[in-house]
Length: 165
Ligand code: ADP
Image 1 (cartoon, rainbow, N blue to C red):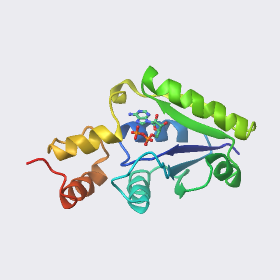
Image 2 (spheres, rainbow, N blue to C red):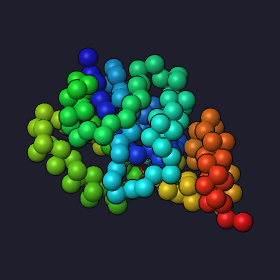
Image 3 (cartoon, helix red, strand yellow):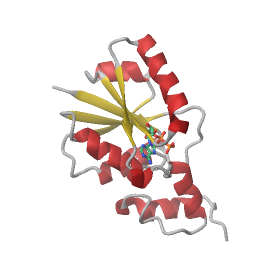
């Protein structure tokens, strides 16, 4: 059985993430999407919200499971029997950082492989931070995030007092 993990902050999930999930789920028997706690980033959405948003948008993919972890990623992967980590690459600018992380993870656990999946050309410009910024300006989010979560994103930004008037 082939098992892969797709880690990220998903703050919130975008159509770019969803595109990677759909393609990875078509290649592996089971795909764990894992919401990670990144100490460099102060997330807008709680861990529970981020997990729930992803769950809502992947219901049609029966082999996708959504979880969150505070553990070292390679340890989490071992606990799920996964040897492959999926990383989406938008542009060369993603590469340096992701390459470094892949080498560190291989040092930590030589049994783990990182697979880079090129972003669909439709979504190379898209990031969670851009989505949050556009929400503050009241932009239409239809082409950036799954429909199921648009209302929740706008509500959160409004409730946090982050809308530009
Ligand atoms: P960000 O905050 O930069 O949007 P995350 O930490 O949530 O991203 O990213 C999780 C993973 O998804 C990373 O491997 C990242 O490179 C990838 N990713 C993010 N946005 C896209 C996109 N638009 N297309 C393809 N992959 C993406």
